[in-house]
Length: 220
Image (cartoon, rainbow, N blue to C red):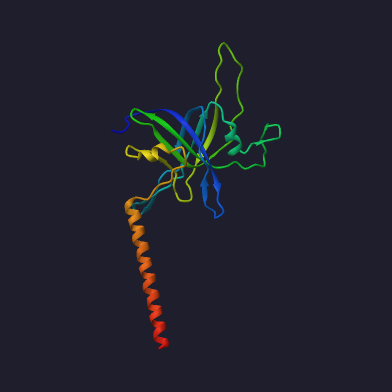
C-alpha cells in the first residue's frame, strides 16, 4: 500500500554539478543541508494552445521547471562556498566577491508519509543570494531562518525531477543520498536499443562481406 498523506520536510541535500571535459555535466557526492524548514516550488511554464482550422489544433508543452523558496535554519558554510561561491580567506573568513559566478546543483529532499518517506531530486538548480536580516530579542527569543530562492530548470536531456514511488526498488531507495539518481531505461527501451545495435552490426557485417567479395572478383 502506498502513502495516503505526506508531511514534514527533512533530509535535504545538495550535489554540485561539475562540467566534464567532453561538455557533459556530472554530479558531485550529495552533501547534507541540515535544518530544512520548508520548501515551496511553483511550476514554471504553462501549456500553450496552437489554433488552426478553427479549433485548438495542438497543445505545446512548456515545462521550464520550478521556481520557489527553500527555507533553512541556517545555510551551511559548505553550501556558501560550493554553490554561492563565497571564498574563505587565510583567516577562514567568508568573503563575497561580485566577480564570482554561483554554481548549479541537484537538490535532494524527502517528505514523511504515513507508510514510507517520499524522496525527491531536482536535477538542475540555481540559488540566489539570501537576504541579510534578523531582529532584536523581545520577551522571548525567536529563531531567524534563512531562505534560498531556487530555480530548478531542465537538464540538456530534458529531465527536471524524479521521486520515489510505491514500487521503487529498495536498493535505489536506500542509496538515494549516496549519488544523484539518473533514470534507467525500461526493459522495452533496452530491448529496442539492443535490437537496433544488433541490426547495425548485421548491416555492417553484410556490407563488409559484399565489399570483400567485390574485391576478390576484381582481383580474379
